[in-house]
Each structure stands twice: as C-alpha cells, then as structure tokens.
Image 1 (cartoon, rainbow, N blue to C red):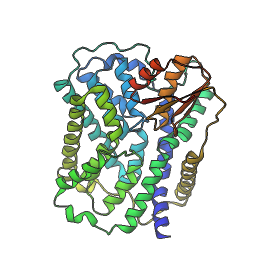
Image 2: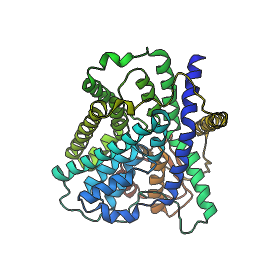
Image 3: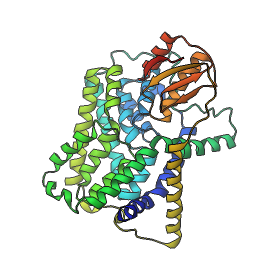
Length: 411
C-alpha cells in the first residue's frame, strides 16, 4: 500500500502536465511542417545546424520515431551535420518531456535541460561539420517515401477535422508511443522511492564525474523514453543523485540506444557515429559538471516531495486527481487498443517499427508503391497487409533506406 501511495503521488504530480504536453504535441503534429525548412538544412553551415537543433525542440518524436524522420530529412537533402543536431535535440527536449520535467523538478531544471541539450545539439553538429563534412550536399529528394512530419493534409481538411486530428494524435497515438515507457518509469520510480535508502547516492557525492560516467554506461545502450525517464530520475535525485548526473542521464538516454546506433552505422558510417557519440558524451558531461559546480544549488530542487502529496488548493487537487485518472486510462487503453484488421491478400514483414511515427513512414512507402490507401500495419508483429502485390526488390530497397529491416512476403 505504501508503494501504491508513492506511485499515485508521483502520477498526481505529473499527470496534468503530461496531458498538457500530449495536447501540445497534437497541435505541433498537425500544424508544423518540415518541408519548408529543407532548403535551409541542406547548406551544411552553422545556420543550418542551429535551425535543425531549434526545429527539433518542439517536435513530439520519441528516440525511435526520430530515426526514420531524420533519415528522411537526410534523403530529402539535409546535410549530415544538420541531421545529427536534429537527432540530439528532438527526442530529449520535446514539448511533452519539458513540461513533464517542470512538473517534478521545477522550472529552473526544465529550462536548463532544454537549453543545455540545445547547446549540445549545436556542438555535435559543428563537430560533424568540421571532421566529417558532406563532400557534396546533393539533392536526395527523389520523391522520398518518408514523410518527415505528418501525413495529415491541412489543405483539404476542415477546421473540425484538424481539431479531431490534434486530439487523436495527442491522446491516442502519443500514449501508444510512450505509454508503456511512462508507466514503467512511474512503477520503477515508486519502487526506487520505497526500497532505496534515503541519501543512497551521498556516498558518491564527492565523485560526481565518476557518478556521471557510471550513468552513461547504463544510459547509452538502453532505450530510454524522454518522458518516461523523468519520474525515475526524480526518485534518484530524492535519494541523493546530483542534478548534473540526472541531466547526463536525461540527455544521453533518449538520444541513444543500441537499435538507433546500428541504424546510424548503416546510413552514416562508423566515423559519423563515433563523432556523434563522442560529442554527445563530452557535451553532456561538461554541462552536467556546469550544473553541479557552477550553477547555484538552490536553483534546483524536486518540485514538492515525492514521499508526500502536498495540496495547494482543493480545486487544483481535484484537477490533479481527474488528470491522473485520465492519464492512467489512456495508458491502459493504449495497451489493449486494437486496430481494425480486414482480410488482405498480401502480407509483408517489416522489423524495427516501435512507434506510430515508424508506422507512418512505413505506411508511406507501401502507399507510394501500391497507390492504395487501405493498408493495415501491426506494429507489434511488424506485418503489413494490403490487397496489391508489390515488387519485393524495390520494396526492400525503400524500407531499408529508412533504417528498417525487410523480412520478406509472408503470403
């Protein structure tokens, strides 16, 4: 019961802000387009790096969904340095995760997280530009099969359809993408808060760099959700982890994982990936040290007490309760939601899809090749079903260009 109480206290603290983040993510998904930015991202100079880092900040993409999007930008003509900056800035400082960070760790740390991650993205892009600059930035725009933002047609949609799409994406697709990671993060946070002794990390307080390196060892290969990791980090801070070490985890975790590293090796090569990881590690360590040593410690604190639920007012307390119930319902619904599947004649297997943005990009490939709209994609099994047979050689080429793995026709 104590663990459940702690779990619900953390949910109560975050839920309103997470729902607000979901809504804003829906707005950005519907109304923000990247196509007008491509000509600026292709130049390979400091301005294109800055713009791609800035462009990545508000987009509601997780660390797996950003990979095909970034590859799509690269195929459309964006420079290598711009794409690397986009890869770093987007998953870790999306609008939903920044708002959720504010809910548990206050405005100062939320702003510091966003600003420093933005600087790291620019730094990494600049390193790529110096040591691994594109020899020739060609227009790779060959009617790319990867829609780099969304496939919602603003021109032909009414205002009501746009609003419906905002809520559909924000409160159905977003929970489906990060719901299980957020729920897992909340459960782990509750267990950490209950089982880990108070001031557990105090013993490492005098060795902050070692602490940060230890965090990196676990954060880099893991799949870490930018929003789902926040309650875990907040719980660790409550046990004595420094805010600088927390920053390192929140930056390095969402920006890297084994799956994305393997895809990047295939698309960009060893040199680019080495520079990408090196600059990310050095940048996050430097900024973590800045937070611990050079910024006033009183700027950073856990917003409220994870162990106890402090009520500010009766009205806001009931808003929190309602938000918590809504958030938990959306997460549970995302676990059991099943899409309608009709009888299809042809089924193909595609591995590597982990979120709805991945699904959108794969859908676009099949739609362009088949000219059909009635295409069913099951993310869990990786099976794509439709009523038209496709040329497997061309299909495999298009799928693998996006970083996914084509496993062949099932029937």
